[in-house]
Length: 103
Ligand SMILES: [Zn+2]
Image 1 (cartoon, rainbow, N blue to C red):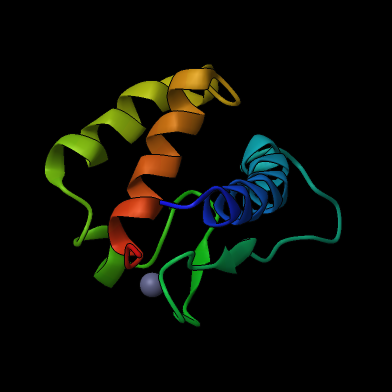
Image 2: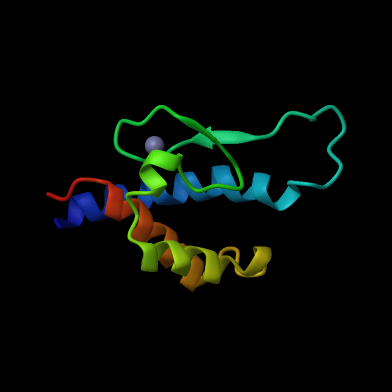
């Protein structure tokens, strides 16, 4: 992977994380006037699916993630305690990378 593509992926991941986790943090807590479930776009390649914030990606792309990586994402999440941890960030990055074409 080239440096430029690596930086682009990091930037995309950073944007994705800041969009996703603040919502995940407040999921289930009282949010006046915001009864609707928050969603975000699936990070899969050219995927336009909107998925609930408690899921990383749509079902089709999540099933493309190798099982050990799926387990790593959930294990690192630790019911929210692992949010922003290096382990969780790395697991998410690896999962997203696994469903995007390499160059
Ligand atoms: Zn998708």
